[in-house]
Amino acid sequence: MNRQFKHLKDIIFGTLYFLCLPFNEGIRAILLYHSINDKDTFQNQMLYLKKNFRIVLLKDLQKEITKDKIKTNILSLTFDDVEKSIYKNALPILKDLGLKATFFIAPNWLGKNIDTPFKGRKIVNIQEVKEIFSLGHEIGAHTMNHPKLTEIPLAEARKEIFQSKSYLENLIGSEIVSFAYPYGAFDERIQNLLKEAGFYYGVTTKEALLKDKDIDWFELPRIGIDEKIGPFQFKGKISKALEIYEFLRGR
Ligand SMILES: [Zn+2]
Image 1 (cartoon, rainbow, N blue to C red):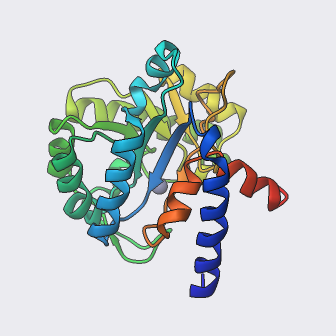
Image 2: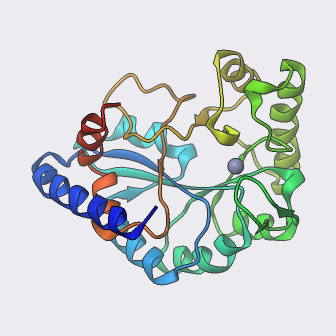
């Protein structure tokens, strides 16, 4: 994305964000991060979220939304694959601010250098996953090998889903209830496997806020945050401005 376009997006979102301010109550959103290299930007984002949202673990989201009667803004933070930059840069900031997040792990990627989908990413190791969990964060499953589940035989998809759950449960000694579809790819058969395996949540990469009612817990949208995003685009994406922006784009 070139700089001018990024700047323009920030202006559009900034304008929409301020127009939407009166309607920004009862916002429910899940954020998705892949890497954190700019600590200052991430810290500013977290400070904004802490001030404006109740931040809960994904595994508690259903309970928190159901019991909320006063239209609190509720948000869950998620990190996919969990490369070292997240461990190194995001974890200390989350700790400082007392924020908890959900980390989606593909066990066969642990401790490795992964070339896809983003070039040259070093993934956290087994010890680091245990440490993340011991800090009070949630560990979620992301298959064993990170395949596109809709493009492999169903029997293999089943193995990827069931094995990642039991592997991670053995690793941390606690139940795993959240699942992230690699590349956001899923269909009804995959959703049924998740239910059969005992998951409560399936998160996608569809960019949207959660609906006000009739939420499908196995098709949860997530708002992807590129760490170089401008401050207004950040605030705008986690507000009703996102819906207007997507509408204007003709989605
Ligand atoms: Zn992934």
